[in-house]
Image (cartoon, one colour):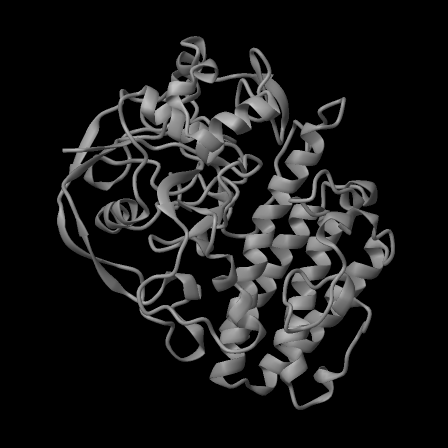
Length: 431
């Protein structure tokens, strides 16, 4: 089997695996405007292949399968046409979940047929892009269903207590990190100077893959700095709370203080007084685990309370490049199917750990274009470029991020108040 076809089947199957523990009712509901129903994710990722891969084919694959899906399952591609309002995706009781799954199968047949006959570099790139797009939605399925279940009166578990969701051949048991708990925090010095970050545009066929917002490669000037050796823990965050962190306006940005007051925030999302809601249900807070589901505002206030700051995205990328790639059995990414942060250990290069996985790390960097950035022509140019305003960059991936989807140059981005993603904190300071 062609390597691209094998990769296509693996990614598409992983999406189906994530939906297996869910009932049709679970897959229908939308808990807030920023989250989408699982059924919508299943349909939208298939619509992406139909709209950007199959629609340009010259054979029978180009014939539209479900014309109404252009309206129902377009996310934000203005160049494609009008779309159903994002906040009302949970109202789409039709098509049924079975019909969406049938649509997925028919799309798979057409894409695999196209690959079997041979594709150009341009089409191959669009298929690779579609697979990475689907991996983004795999993470969203987990975070969106967690938000849904986290607001259910019974706080149901996503999967049975006795077992975990299989994650395909690449999955495996998590190897304990050294010591079992969070090691003492240390400051790891990083050199300043001119550093090169970003990536060159993908080669023919889209490999090695990177999104357009990761390029072009360019130089930055860094002052010497230090990064915390691990992520901020729940216990450290509870110390911030006990010290009146949510009641001290001197710790907060103006917008953050307004957000805290307006939303009556007093702890991270999914926390009770002594408990935390996870995809496996509610349990006591573990002080050694990385704190998760905090906003940029909360991360920034904690850093100020701790006498530190948040790192820039350039600082994190430079450190990640020096430390090396994720470790298969140590870094807590989605392939371990834990779907929850776990205590760190002394495992990564250059004295840094948890650079990948566990939680996305808020940075102090506004999400904007790199020097020389040019969006792609047409609708695909809307993928990232049009969101380069009023958002902050996060780095490193989370426990819900597929391993093959993360890299040192990856730039995630969310509004400063967002908390439903697995977002956490690494501290930095000047040296």
